[in-house]
Image (tube, rainbow, N blue to C red; front, top):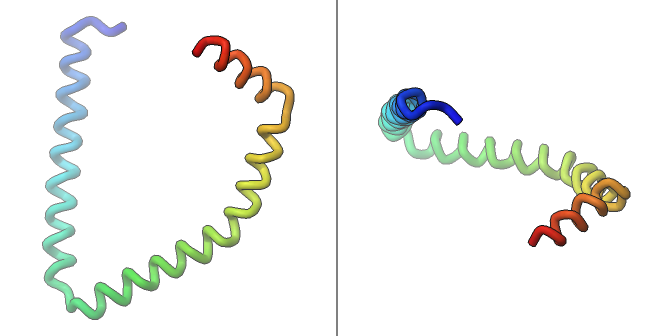
Length: 86
């Protein structure tokens, strides 16, 4: 565990990063709001279609791989150990 002053400094640095990122997002939000609504909506739709296509290509494999991993002995052992602790 970090000494308290180091923890406070780390927490302060993380909080400053959050505030900086929040300011950046608000600036981007203002810039986006200034754009023509139709263009923003159509761009959003294009991005969503791209994400849906990517997910439809990857999801079947990912779900299959996950199902296979749950069938392995090491995962069963991990699950049993977890159940005993609960």
